[in-house]
Length: 289
Image 1 (cartoon, rainbow, N blue to C red):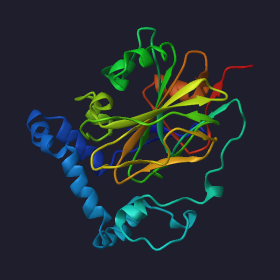
Image 2: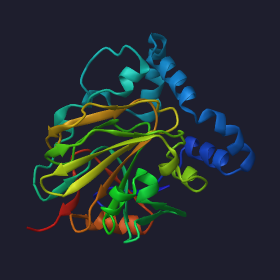
Image 3: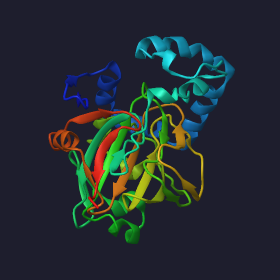
Image 4: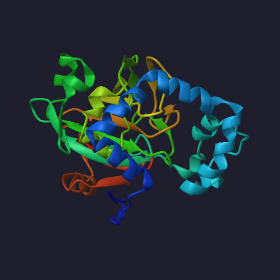
């Protein structure tokens, strides 16, 4: 897989997990064998194991394998693997860009941006999506025609807490049930994962970017999307929630003319390259006042 960072450096990295998932999702028989593992009951069982005290034994090997620098996180004694997985980073390690015209990243991850056509459809690799199938709400979907879909893919080694991208008023959370495919790009070639996976969204009536739809998408072995608030007034950089164990995805939908992706991110997206971004840093610009 090819990634780029915000400094223009490109890197190619394929892990053992990538190769394993490519094999599983690349063959009909193995995809059929996978189906029983995609349900929420399996995820809940895995979550219980990872919430147990004995799961602490998994932490040292995960840190070594993924080269996690624990010095940048708040120091605490972890009661379980999931307690470690949802660890909180030091504030100075993720400064929040406070410029009102800047759209910030809600999380650490790998970002691709897609134009939503006037018919409310957009394309992720070889899979066509519609905002209606994503939201299960035709009227709401039409509000984002001509805008952008911002897809932030989190890997297991990423920081798994996320924030609000602007000051504003947040709606109630809407939950959409579904299965739990991996969000690794290889799965998207076989399944429309973002309209099949369990997900949750809310609307942020923001001060600077119109009404931003913020969606959290669960993934394989992610049994919990843990959002902090229902309807509330929120502020830029305030913690919105976190994912439990596993890779996962955050999707932003922005309305036509309200935000434009940074040029490097847009160019990378057009070329099928994900851009590595950090929570709180610039990913786009709002409409000039």
